[in-house]
Length: 184
Image (tube, rainbow, N blue to C red; front, side, top):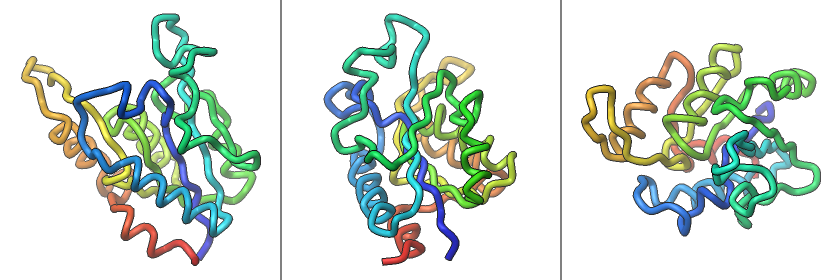
């Protein structure tokens, strides 16, 4: 099988379990770590996406502890890092060019938050013609009020975001299914 790139989105310290309370998929980091380990063993490409905010009060603002990668997701020297200031990891980052130069057409996307950076990145990936998988149990999000003001649970927000992506932009899968595609 042709190599598939793993894109890990915004696994920074301000998004750690200690920094946030209400969310879904408490096992998401464990699933991401199993995928990261498999990708490293297979020597497949890994892209770590880091959000760098332009807002000084943001936990993602440069040179703050919150903007750093969580210890379990620190990139190895040869792994690619993309810095973004918008939810979409393709927006003004050079990611598309980096993938095309390496003839990488298959992408697996994990990280946070499902309805923001993960969804935005997966939509662009699909629109740009990449074969894209979003790993449902390796993403998480938070409660959010809908347009009418009704607060939706993190699980509802997650499920709707995945429904928005399914079929048109990406295939929705889980870590166990995706791991079956990775050479041992």
